[in-house]
Image 1 (cartoon, helix red, strand yellow):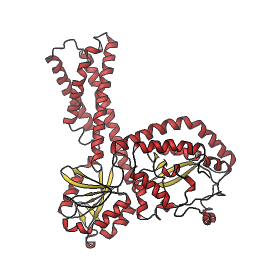
Image 2: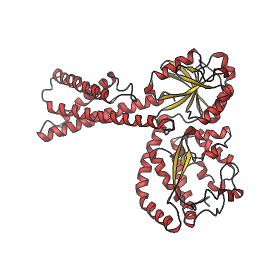
Image 3: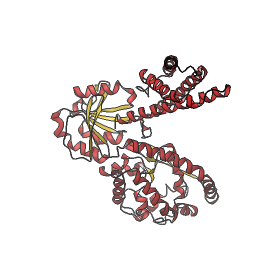
Image 4: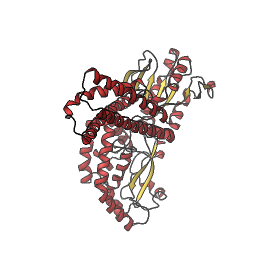
Length: 475
C-alpha cells in the first residue's frame, strides 16, 4: 500500500476540483443573472465540460497534482494566478471559435475568480492538514492518506537506489525508520542519510519499539533463503511486507505485485487492502458518529449529572490505549469506578476470570452503583463516538488494548494491532463478558481482520444493537 494511498488521494483531489469548478460555474451564472437578466442556463451548460477540462488540465500541467503534500503557499498562489490568466484566454478563444457571441464576459470573469478562490482555499487546507500531520510526528493517526513509516531490510546498491527514490519524492508521505543488514558489524553506519539500526536478530525489537507500517526487503538473491523467518514474523505482526525481487514463492495470506515508479515490489498483506472500502468505512464513521454525538448529547448531560451527584471524582475517564502498529491515543469513557480504582487493582487481581493479560472480574467492588448500570447497557462506552469522530477509532474493529497488555502479547496476537480499533467487534456480539479465554478473544479479532468487508461491518453494527439494548452478556 506504499503508493496506492497517494494515487487515491490524487483522484479524490481531482474529483474535488471538478466539483469546485462546477460550483463556481453555477454561482457565476447566478451572480451575473442577478445583475441583469441573461440567457437561460441551458444556453451556458454546454460550456461546463470545456471549463472543467481547462481547469483540471492546467492544474495537472502546472504540477498541482504531483506534489500535493509539499507545495508552498506562494507557489500555490502563483500557479493559480497563471491558470486564471491562461485559462481565461483559452476559454475566451474557444467561445470566439465556436462563435457564441451571446456569452457574458462578466459571467466568465465571475466563474474564473470564484474557481480560483475556492481552489486556493482547498489547496491551503490540504497544506495546513499535511503540515499539521508532520508536526505531530510518527504517532500520527494511522488513517487513510497520511504519512507511512517503513523499515528497509538491505543496504546494498539496489537498497540505496530505493532510498533515493523515497527521499526524492517527499510528496508520497513515506518516512524511513531505519535500515537493517544481515551483518551485525554494519550497525550504526549511515547509508544515504539513513542509519543502520540493527541486524536480522534485532528486527522484532525494532518493530516493537518503533512505529513501523510496512517492511521493505531490498535484498540480493543470496539472502532469499535467510529472510523467510522474518517474513513469517511480519505476517504474524500484521505488517505489510514488500519484497523487491522478481519473484519469491512464500505461502503467506495475500500477495500482489505493485510498482513504485518503476521499482517492482511483491507485496504480502495479512490485513485488508481495499483502500476505497477503507475510505468509505472512515467516511461512514465520521458521518455516523457526528450525528450520534448530537442526538445523544441530552443523554450525555443526564449521565454526567448522575455521576457527579453520586460519587466523588471526574465525570470522564481518560486512558492511554494502543492503536495501529504502536500508535496510541486517549480513549474517553464515562467514569464507572471509584477514583482510586487503578491503585486498588492489585487487591482484586486474584479474582480475574480472564485467562491472559486482560483483567475481567464479576461484581468488581470498585464499580459505583451508577457505573454498574452504565456498564450493563454500555452507556459508558458511548463517549468513544468522539474517538471515532476524530479518527482514533472506528465503529467496528478490535477493542483497543492497554500498552501493558500489548507487552504480554504473543507474536501472533500482535496482528490485532494491524487494524484501527473499534467500539464493537465480533467479541461484542459473540459472547461479550461470557468469553473468559483471552486466546478466543484474539481469535475473534483476527477472524474479523481476515474476513473484513463493509458488509461484515454492517452486520456487526446491526447485531450489536440488540446485544446492548437487552444487556446480553453484560455484567
